[in-house]
Image (cartoon, rainbow, N blue to C red; front, side, top):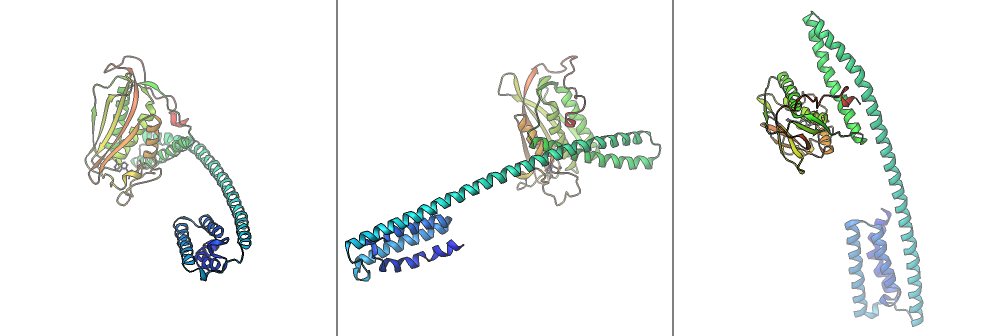
Length: 381
Ligand code: ADP
């Protein structure tokens, strides 16, 4: 600010010194260079440009004026005085500029060091936060699972309809809490780079069965129709991360059911040629006839904790983490997520991932039990 004010007056004071200091024959050219460099150092952006341009115009104008009207300039008496004035001006300007540049770089280095320290500290805090969240989420999931298990027993064994009604309430709230905690755990693992993608053989039929069961369950809860479109040409055994793919598709199905009040949900699975000979590009798409997403909101729906178009859907439970995790998983598997949506008409969310073909035949692959859920779902790891 102080420099701003000083620099603003440079074009005013400069002419005075110019006429009393010998015009362009003395040390004025050195002082002019100093003024320009000083301005560039002390001001920023457009201000620096404007003041520098003003200084240039003033200096050129003064030189022309002094050349046309030599009588207006108090010239130095002798050649020796001019030489001494030049040497003195040059020396003073060199020293002051040298000190200014030195201080400027020292300041820059100090600021850089502070920035690096602040960044490292922020990273340490962020890692500690992610570790804390991961540990807490992991610890919280155990008692929730116990509570849900006991609640399941009450649901099954109680003769009282009233008690079973309460128990269903506990189940619904417990499921939501478990999803929330699992999402936070996944997100913190992703942030810490601790999520490893596996490549195990799995039966395509198992993936289709599991997703169909999930789709049926979600849509039944909301009184919606459920359809499937399966590409019969899909190879019977693929190699990839079964659980990851299932989690992404389950999130699409859950959202499709949540954000659709009338109509239905369709699950499609298909495959196209992959980049390598023993690879296919597996495409899992979930379309719905629901609320859709406004075009201006589409770019943010994959951001963590972002819930889009909230007016009108505030009653729908959610954390805004599902799609963020889905996108991370898709990218970790070397694939991507795509969305098409029409406001008030419906959406299509699709996952495309490259999968190795472990058995290219169609139909049942035989007795080998691929794609079994590992004991203790990986999310619990
Ligand atoms: P949430 O827990 O809020 O469902 P997601 O990350 O799964 O979080 O989704 C982010 C947002 O994207 C949602 O809040 C919702 O507004 C929008 N969205 C996701 N899927 C659909 C869909 N099938 N139809 C309409 N909106 C959707």
